[in-house]
Amino acid sequence: MVVASHGSAGGQHLLPGLSLEGIGKHGVFLFFVLSAFLLTRQALRWPAGRRWWPQLGAYALRRVARIFPLYLLVLVAAWLLGGPGLGVPIDADALLRHLTLQQGLGIYWSIPVEFLYYLWIPPLAVWLAAPLPMALRGAGTLILLAGCMAWFPAAASPANSDQLRWYLPVLLCGSFAAWLATGPAPRAGTRLPVADLLLLALLLLSTPALLTLPADAWHREFLGWGIAWGGVVLAAHWGRFRFLQSLLESLWLGRLGHWCFGLYLLHLPVQALARRLPLAGEVQAWLALAGAVGLAALAHRWVERPAIRLAAGAADRLSRSA
Image (tube, rainbow, N blue to C red; front, side, top):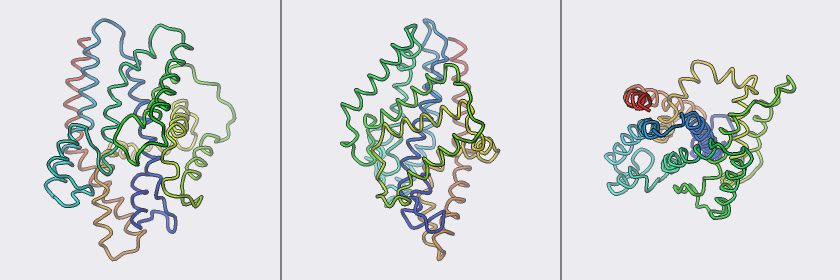
């Protein structure tokens, strides 16, 4: 969604005649919800006891290894290239601010948002797993959500802000969905592909060009996207997508899942190169997508995977000591 959106913004349409500009932000919101869901679900499974720090240390190691090695490499490359960098201009001061999560220019805006929310997940999981009535824990989380919306109203959010506070409703919905997923799944109803059809309708209705709306029409609907994507993730967890899940479980989409962070960080310069080719915009779009996927696969093979394996070994040793 992000690649398609940025491509359309530069005249590279994956679907001939249809601009997908604007859906990239919706894709990032899906990533926020999915990330919060998966990590909160893991934290809810941490064994209770006095020795909590090994689990927390293992969690921190894994999160740093997942984000920073490739992020550091991309930022340094952008700084060394100068000018537009890898799609986002980075000087020495900006390099330091980005690495310390104080700034997120261009597509990097989501990195400090995502990473800083990692700090929220352990205490939130402790609350959600506390030996208290379920209604009380749920009410406390909803009060926190309402407070975030009141203190940081979505209408006041700057475009592509790198501040976590604006996106807390989206991320909290992902964590809340993880807590709901610990309970029993609701009884399956109709055999019709209702969930698949609802998701397709959501994607169609959120494509601004189809409704002749501005590209950023839905970009500040944080709670709405949190609830919508939270529902999608829960439905997937409960096995409600008959057709989508068979597609997502395919070998190549599984690999694409491993490469997605590199694809996010590296697609802009590939799209910029493709625009220099004397080809139709649609051909440029597909060539740019193929090139960005290939570059992301290499980045995962030589940068991300070694870092993740190294951190995983250290994290496992910490976890066993808990």
